[in-house]
Length: 169
Image 1 (cartoon, one colour):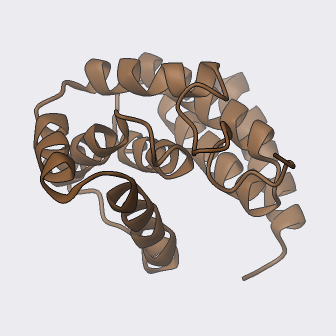
Image 2: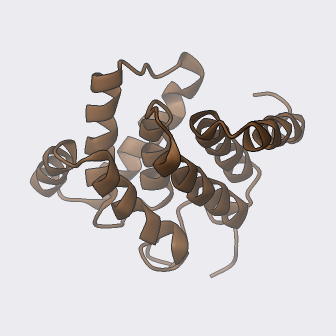
């Protein structure tokens, strides 16, 4: 990997520019990147805030291309949440609809998030929930994800924290 702290500074600078210009869809995508970097640095609360802000911007946006990545990141942070497989299903449907690729640099993280969610949900339950998620509208998917980010302990792993949290139990 590279220098996460430097990447964070650049992403935050880009976010500020997109915020000033009113480019909601670009800001949403950049906030997803900021969330990923914060998570990589072990600051789960900052990651959660960035993803929350990204979803809020995505609601305002006229393009949904950043939304699949946001939904997948949130599902990956909260793999035990009942809605996590639905978020993955919704993300998959949106990726297909908008022809949004998974970049090679993001593939390992994408697969890790999917494996974490699958591990927390029984096989057929997981498959049914993913299928149900594929039927969600963009607004329903966003509404399903927002509560996870509003209350850090609501749908987290067994310890009451998002997956990857470095805080002591």
